[in-house]
Image (cartoon, rainbow, N blue to C red):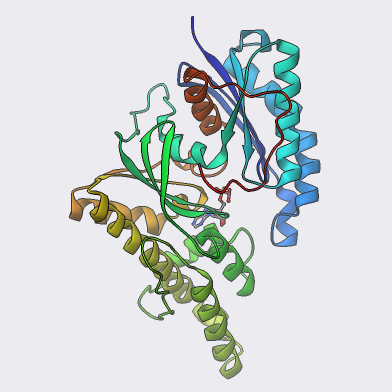
Length: 340
Ligand code: KG4
């Protein structure tokens, strides 16, 4: 009999539900929350409220697009963390209630594992984009910057991670500081395409091993912009494309230096990326170029699987389900998960 898993994701500001049948995607519905735009960042309380409003219609739509009803489901997988606690509570409580009422198993998923396994979602008419084991995943989002070694769908080792800000945070905070808007990543990405990445340079961190740091480069940009604006109040407006291109190049250089080091140290040539920042066009281009030079097999996730979505939670949940893992009904969400 087929295993049909409903995935539920509510860790930040996207409410999403997806259905997967034996690893094949039947539906993936995402309701993004526009309410945060005017605040320049996610407002946790508004996010929880929007999840509460969205969760029922989103799950109904996912079941309907998959052509099934709740009684066809084998199990429900949900994001337990990391993320915003109020947002996670909505998805967790909903998943528990639905599993209890349908009398089917509940499986909890680490949101980051979802990002790392997104490439394993099989889709009708789409070539398989999954790397072979072991592979390295550069996991880059608004909350994380890590290099993870993946030995199986259930075995993850963090080889390096940020010691301060995440790279997505650097994009978002710097965009806000430059008055460009939120979320900063896509805005800087779009402006960078029209700018000169070699025009300006920013301080790069010196961090041991495979760890990252992004707070210094953020400060470097802040002082640079402040000093230039003191000389010419129009400086930002006149140069924003070159500033974005140079700043983005600096972040990509930092990310790639450690990824190249990790590939050399482990001898692993299967490489993938995940998380919201993996949508960045400069990063995608660069990883493909490095891959050609270094004979890596590079797997780029489809854009729809780079940001938060429930398809990745359903596929990760599917593997946990197959491994016999079940989640008790007294489980609580967690905002931070130190390790996998
Ligand atoms: O994975 P995600 O949707 O949410 C979590 O952080 O869990 O990632 C959101 C992050 C934000 O920081 C956003 O600015 C960044 O991903 N992002 C991008 C791009 N698209 C989204 N960063 C750089 N370039 C992009 N094209």
